[in-house]
Image 1 (cartoon, rainbow, N blue to C red):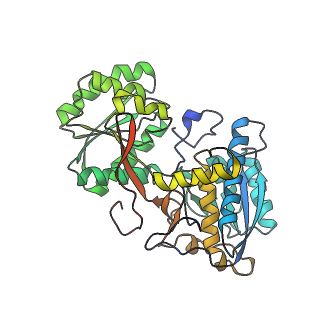
Image 2 (cartoon, rainbow, N blue to C red):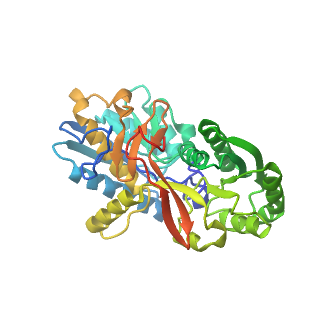
Image 3 (tube, rainbow, N blue to C red):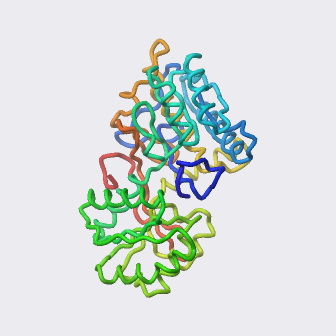
Length: 390
């Protein structure tokens, strides 16, 4: 998926992956240096979900987010969460109005909305109230001020993968990106990640975001990889877009995968059918801790009889983090930015996570590869912010 800048119901292929999770849960063991479970307190939470538009996708996401939030509430011990649900219909104008209404009704923190335009509108609407917005988005462009994004960002992914690559002798990176907004954003994130890891970008190449554009560009990409001495091809392509065709054409045009490592900025294991593609075999990508997330999926299915959509974990962990901080919201005051951005972070259903003062986040990610059509973790997700992986 490509970008949460636009509403997913307009084009699922335009969404960035929002597959991370956040924060602290009473049922998930915390790692060293993470915040302790909630220890009392009461907090009023406004949950803004995209239900109410009449679109089936919005109804599905909305129901899953609310279900996961309530599952988290049931797991908190000694904490009173007054959850009030507001249905935005995916509309920025409605999100703005409901955010104001929620604050007027006593909300101390806003969880959601789902789409990034909504989150931006909600943040602006309550900017002078002291109430923070924890959005179900990974679009770093909307982060800042009182808006935090909870989803796995391109920068987080690029840093993790670049660090792992450089540590393993793969330091000469050729960036291969889609010639569109998401591709440009991804390219910039990879450049920052490689620089922070101590690697070098030996070239940047791109392709028109179309089938013909990929076909036309493939041989040139391979030539550039060979002439630049690249040991890594870092791809922004995703499984819903260019990745299936691009990965195969690079191999067909003579790339040597024994010496040139494919790395993906997006999840290569979703949908599962991607794992059977010949071109992605041996590629590296980052993902949340698969063991922890599997536990969450099992618990959700046990409670609701169906598998959660990937973003549901964000609502669970958002509530769990709020619960961990509830005793700090005295006298109905909003949860402060200082509390939300504590350096220790939180541990949640997809691993450790912390919010940053600029509104983005850091999370502990595993590095995985695809072998014989199966996902294999080759570097486990860190369980604290002081170890490898950061």
